[in-house]
Image 1 (tube, rainbow, N blue to C red):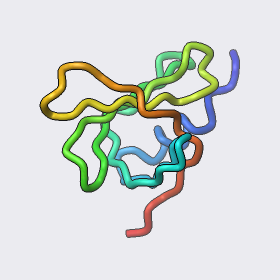
Image 2 (image 1 turned 180 degrees about the horizontal axis):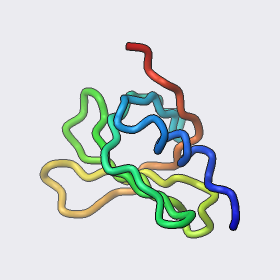
Image 3 (image 1 turned 180 degrees about the vertical axis):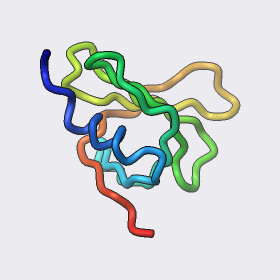
Image 4 (image 1 turned 90 degrees about the vertical axis):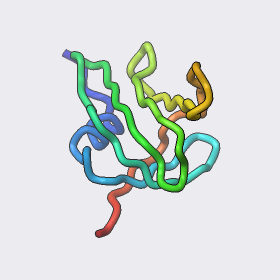
Length: 93
């Protein structure tokens, strides 16, 4: 069995505590994840972002090498891809 994606492992182990994520576009923000789970190597979670009313979804790429981030605003019906997670940091209380 192949190893789990290290970013997904960090997200799963930290959830539901808030985490600071850096995305592929350079954006850094604090997210609160819920329902973080693995299905073999595939990862998925839902979440919210501090100071943003939108919903966020975190899922493994097809090859499980990346964690993709989708965003859906309250008045939207479809998800928009916003990038990939490149770094995970714990948030000090």
